[in-house]
Image (cartoon, rainbow, N blue to C red; front, side):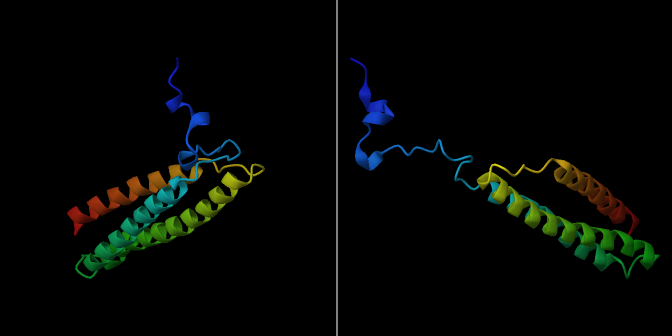
Length: 128
């Protein structure tokens, strides 16, 4: 005789298995975690710009030292804005099957910006 305790259709009412076949996505927080990760990345850029800003007055050429500071600030603000927009679009696309999920251009550009910003920050450490 097969063990019927493990079959979903014989589960007791208090442990009933919910039918999620009508849902396009898991009700979990994957989209929220991704947005929080992008927010942390943007905050890292903003923090980096604040650290670089402290070194601007002591640099030999403050105008040149201000360029990476401004770039990190701009990248941080752009990442915050785009991650918020992407989160909203993803939420709508997950619930409405007629919408398409966004492509990977934003993450690729953000990764390039992170590498570029990190390279500039390391370079500034050695130059200042």
